[in-house]
Image (cartoon, rainbow, N blue to C red):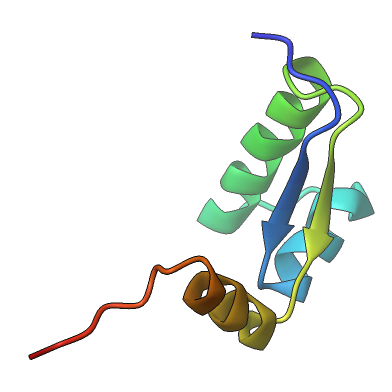
Length: 71
């Protein structure tokens, strides 16, 4: 599964910045970041992680027809 040129969007600037910082962290979040870095470098070459504000995600989700209408 070597996928190329995939843009991952996250709504957490801290997550995006931490992925690219190279710092090591011993808390659980650090383990997730380390595993994510490993996947990005081995399975998702030429891919990137971009920060997208949550408000943009809500608009995109609504435009895509993902909103739920309650009766």
